[in-house]
Amino acid sequence: MTDSDKVTFQELRFERLLDAPIEKVWRFLIEPELRARWFMSGPTEAVVGGKLGFTMSHDRLSDDDVPVPERFRSHVGASWAERITRIEAPHLLSFTWDEGKAGEVTVALAEENGKTRLVLTHSGLRGRGDAENFGSGWHSHLAALARRIRGDGVPNFWALHAEAEAAIQKALGKDG
Image (cartoon, rainbow, N blue to C red):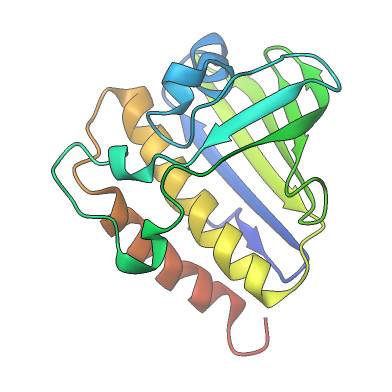
């Protein structure tokens, strides 16, 4: 986690400076093939009210042959779509999570000296369980994104996820 990251039971905020121009980072958010390399693929209707599709293919996020941990195996192959609530290419993408029951995710991009500052905010969380689950997920997926953007590999996504889980647990503490 970075000093600017914020993790509470109600909201997550992650900030990353990515070594790429904003247009490249935007493509990694919007284009299903690029989004699949760090998060989840799925069809994109890049308009307000459009669908942002997700297919859980976390078994393909690692470059090495790494098994999916048992507790996540049942999710592999799951597909669904969320609704885009705001889009301002190439600077902002907001969408629901679990049809809004698990809040809204906003990804803001800003140019900064030839790089891109990404700020991901997931608001409207339902408590500690959401904060732990989404916090470790976003933290690990953003680590994978930073590596993919740099052209580095992601040998073991699940190692990133384990590190993220520990960091989120520490940030939330016993009482959050």
